[in-house]
Structure formats: C-alpha cells, structure tokens
Length: 319
Image (cartoon, rainbow, N blue to C red):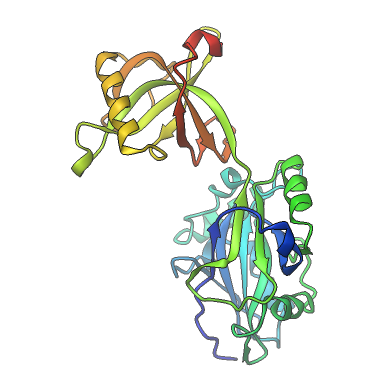
C-alpha cells in the first residue's frame, strides 16, 4: 500500500471572467454546489475522503467507497466535490445537506445513501502512481486525471473547455447552474492557497425584499444591525426569505439603523416567526434590494448580501 502525501485543496478566488484577449489561456469548468473533498486512494482498494478542513468524512459517504476498487493498484490523490444531483442532473446543495455530518452514524449514512445518492465530481489529480503532480501545469494534471477514465454512477470527470469563457458562463446560466471556475492552463497546484490562478464566477441574482426585523451586531456594531431579516410579500402576508448580514458600508448600516429605530414594533410581521435568536421586529415598510446565489426549496435565499435601499418602492409595489 502506497504512503500518500496529505495535500490541502487549492481554493478559487471570487472574480470575473478573464479578459477576452487572454480567454484561450484558461480552461472553464462548471462550478459545483457541494462539499469539497480530497480523495486518497492508496491502491489497495480503499478510499479515504477528507473535507477542506481536513476532517475525515469517509463514513458519511459509503456509496463512494467503490472508487477504491476501481483504482486498485493505482495510488492516487484526487481533488473534487461531493454533490447530490436533482432530477435534471444539477448539483443541489440542499439535497446534499441530508448527507453531511453523518460520520458518526454508519447505519444512518447507509440509509441516506439509498435515499439521496452522492456523486463525486473529480477535477484534478495531485498525486498519481508514486509521483506528486502539484508542480505540473493544469493541462498536464488534467490529462493525467482524464487518463484514468473515472466515469461511473457515483463519480465522474466532467469536461473542461479551453477558451469560450463567455459561452460557458451563458450555458451555465441557461441551465440553472451556479457558474464556472476559470483555471489558468499554466498554473501549478497551490495546496491550501486561495489563488488568482483559479477564479470562480457565480451568477448573481437580485430581488426586492421587505425588511421585517433585524438582529443587533456585536462588538463595535453594538446597537447597529448585524443582520436584517427580510421577506417577500404574498397575498395575505409576508413570507420570511432569510437573513442578510453582509454588503453594507458603515454609512449605510448607520442609515438603516435609524430607519429601523423609528419602525420598531413588538410583534413579528412574518407569517411564521423565524427561528432567529435575539430578533427585533419592525413595521414591514422598508424595501431593499439583495443579491443572492440561489434559493432553497423552502424559498430561503442562499448567500444573500445587501445591495441597496429602494426608497422608490413601497411594500405594496412588491405584491
């Protein structure tokens, strides 16, 4: 059995598509919405999965164990993302959440594997057949990975497209995917580094929301909003959509605090009281615009950030 080096995953930097003039120097991969995992395959038929934190998450995913047998005799360390696919074959983080955190319960992990199968999307090879590939350019590592032919029910190596970044981004938008990762063709693998050689470009969605409450900040933000509790109008009420805690300048945070102070009320304006500790309620008359990545099936905003106040809109305008 080979002794495998521990290699921390390389991380992508949020950003925009590379300039058109350098487009052909980049490869584009679909950005997956799952749990990052490095797969350690010593070649004896076994598999160990380590999360980005270094935690051993192997027991949570018994349906991925067969990858070890596929690579029996081929020691490897492969980088990828564990996802749960929806009915259209797209990664769905909400589905995957039912699989995460089950490392201490093998029986439950096995039951959940039957209900919500996991899929390991492989996108890099950092060690193969006794050789570290970390110093090699992306193109050579990618060729080594594709040469393994790892495509099955529970794992795959999706294609990477060289150039055509704008088209790739448009395709993922039309398909309802999260975005793309741009990877410089000449880039080496930088373990544990958030590198500009990998750029993640997400599709940004926006919506107008009504503020129904807030949670005080801590420390220097004492007395100011640490997060806003927002909702969307529907016939008969205000549906809670989530908590927004980023995106303000200090000046706007202070301005919003003043508006919240004069709108304070004692009762929750949402249809159902959100499970948020320390919430304070306000009259649902303040409208703002937020950016967000996706929405859960329950209608909650994922990764929301504050964009701007909308003094030009009244709550009734959103009905």
